[in-house]
Amino acid sequence: MTTIIIPSWYVLHTKSRFENVVHEGLTRKSIEVFLPKVLVRSRRVDRKAMIRIPLFPGYLFVKSDLTPGRHIEIVKTAGVVRLVGNQSGPVPVSTETVESLKIMTAGDGKILTGPILNKGEPVIVISGPFEGVTGTFARYGKTGRVIVNIEALGQFASVEVDEEDIEVLKQ
Image (cartoon, rainbow, N blue to C red; front, side, top):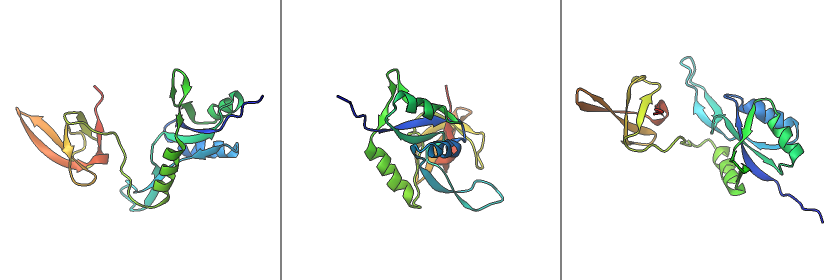
């Protein structure tokens, strides 16, 4: 009796900025792949164009039964780092999650992403007028904005910046 393995969706980690290369490579191998992209304003000073960028930089989704041959074929694609999983191997993602992402990214609506910030977490401002400032996350402000406390001389000042302009500092 033969066991039929139903293909599942898996998260594939790619080299930095290699999402499109991996997407094209897997598509050429006739492997089903999904790279969710969102529409954002270009950050380049000389442009005001809207561009599509990966929703999750460094990651995309691949659908496979992960037979040994198919598994090797996927991870040997140029730009692939690994399939995301644990000690037991790659962990599948629900079809509902992937379908929801497909619906969300099909339109041009604004989609906010990023890590959930916790009060008191150390952060650094990576762009904008406060670039280079370090402080602690205080709270979420208006849509897409956060409040950061900067301590100096035993007192603090708060600034409001775009959420995409800060990164959590690794301790």
